[in-house]
Length: 120
Image 1 (cartoon, rainbow, N blue to C red):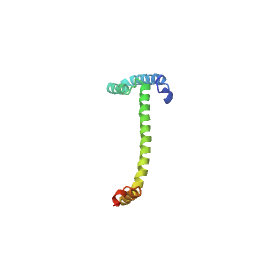
Image 2 (image 1 turned 90 degrees about the horizontal axis):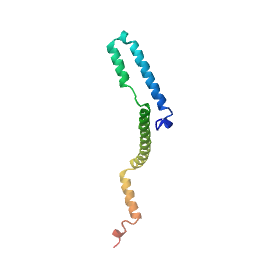
Image 3 (image 1 turned 60 degrees about the horizontal axis):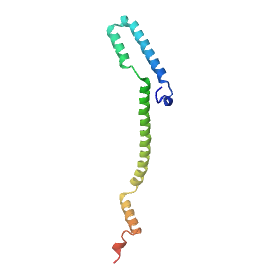
Image 4 (image 1 turned 90 degrees about the vertical axis):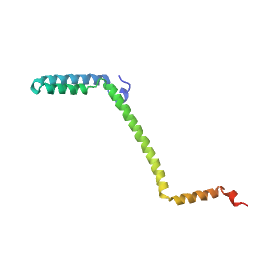
């Protein structure tokens, strides 16, 4: 039993046996049609079976689970980041830059940043 079988909800050993059984059945069907379709077709069909064979079904599912988990985390992270940047971008985008500078100067006066300059 693979590590993530508990989370993915399937038995990897059973699925591996099923995959092997289906590959064997397909090879047998190809063998039956070998004479009818020709040797080139048979070699191509067997090549497809060999190219698409999965030797470790549990490992493939676990890899896909981990990739999907990472994509989900990225989607959440990007969604939260876009919401925050959208909200702050809207606030800063609505108010003209001249008002921001004016507000900064006003607050500087209110907090006493220029008190030393005005006294003689």
